[in-house]
Image (cartoon, rainbow, N blue to C red; front, top):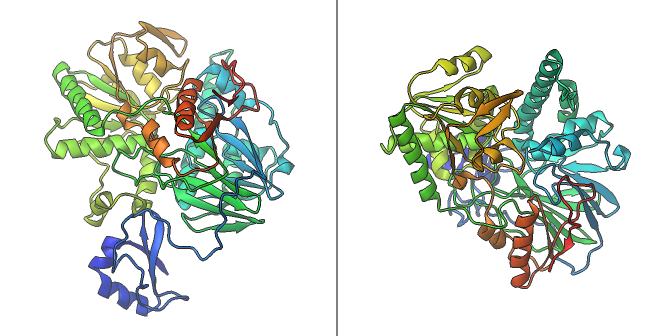
Length: 539
């Protein structure tokens, strides 16, 4: 039997844990998902390792443990190549192809999101053959990184999919939910004879086939695979998110995945980028910094106070994963500090209620002060008057709700989901507040609301916009410009930018070059709607 405990729990209950280990139980001490010590088990006696942070806490909770593997240093040469078939010169659709040590490696396979033109890319034929792919590595579970994975498997991919344990747990919920929603949307559009009816990209059976291919890769434990050493580092974006280091005799390559916002206080900061010959780095907020997080919380509290006086609803489009839990955490903390009134809080998302289970399972990836809530049997993500609305009837009942309330619903980019129904029913009310707390792509509904349009089209109907629209950028789960520069400062090779709008990448490239680093915008191997540039080196 194996039991996971935090450093704090190991310190508090050391004698009992030693006794349990002496009777054959394996006690694994973890911090932020990284194993830092072990008691008992087949390969260890019932005693703490000399280096265990239970006896001498590490200065950095997410620091990588020492490895006995022979190090491979950045060579100054590039004996490998990387091409991008998504999230190049655009934000979504992450999909990259690494050729190293005779292996063809796919990194991510996400959905394009944000506009009809981008959505249409999801159903295009692949630009490569399934039989050419030797292995697949997934940086994290968000759909713009994993959302086409079942389609890839349906079309013939049948080899390993490597991901962290939390990513494997979370992606199961996200992909099954996506399959269900796509089917429902298609059947609804068919019933109403809508010309835009699009068949689902994949079905539940395709998701199950993909899940059967997953193999776990743990943080900071190198995987030796076909002549390549692969190491997953903490990225701090969502539970399970990883940056991936690939090492071979041909050189060192890093794929950043999505990097977390270091100003936030639930997940640990991203582990800095190791030196490499080439780094493929995200650039979502490469042209700007987030406002101070304390200011974000002050604005958030002020809007909730204002909504209480007006008696209207606060609608918050939010991803079921990470952003929803982040909002719930801070609503609960603001309530405890008496900085906001206690309001009814509804999370109108069956998916979010399932994600909560995975958050409890991933608790050792959180910062120690968040873990402490679980130690005292409290849910850190539960405000005082809180409810999940699982059924369709419960969701519809919110339309008749009187008095101020907070309704959090997906999808975060307003590409679908229950939030669209709430907007249709409430945008025409001047007492409604719409709070945009995440990135909204050009051409999408969220960006139109931010830009102040006086009407939008929802479900084929023209809907007037009388509600107040607020943008609060500090809740972003992405690193900002300063944090991206800090993360990549130790790279002696080339930093290639992906996962950003062209303007953002141009600004960040100039910043990197100005401090003496080689940097470029990664070219796109497929046409990107609205992009007339060619990528490559910038001046």
